[in-house]
Length: 229
Image (cartoon, rainbow, N blue to C red; front, side):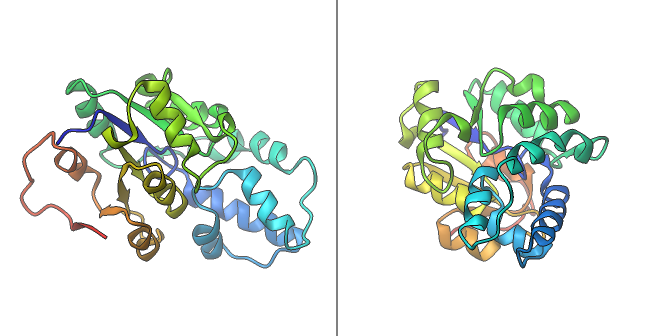
């Protein structure tokens, strides 16, 4: 069955920013005295808002400073300049959803300003600029369901009619908690495949599979592996 609404995550689903972001995050946290690595940041913080990252780190006694989140956001333009690309084949999939007349939106832990930056750099912003939902709009971010429920309500759809496209464990947990079907993209070799499966997502490795998974196309020959966890 086709969904009534498709909800895309942004980082890691629409735009490839996780490598850049988590290398910098590991550097900043290590410099502040928090024991971590790039690989640990990928597992621990992907899908979380930077405010949530700050709160979790400071709960261990490592102080990041009151301006940590603002400093982080202020440096994103320089970090991403000329280096952000769209996830392979995602544009065609978004255009297929749009062409089928299915409403869609973005629900991301990132601020709207960051989404404008990354989607703008990849040329995807015109497809989404009127339907951007951020964790800053709700009381609790991922892994809580608030953001997805807010996006669905605003777009006029019941949770059961929605499908979420995620790449993170917190996002997958949030989508399942919201009562939505969750397709968990794990084309990134650094992604937490085991965690996504345990969270209840339907795993898929190639963005070209999305049309088939949501009922817009016939199965492709030799499509990548996907399954319901």
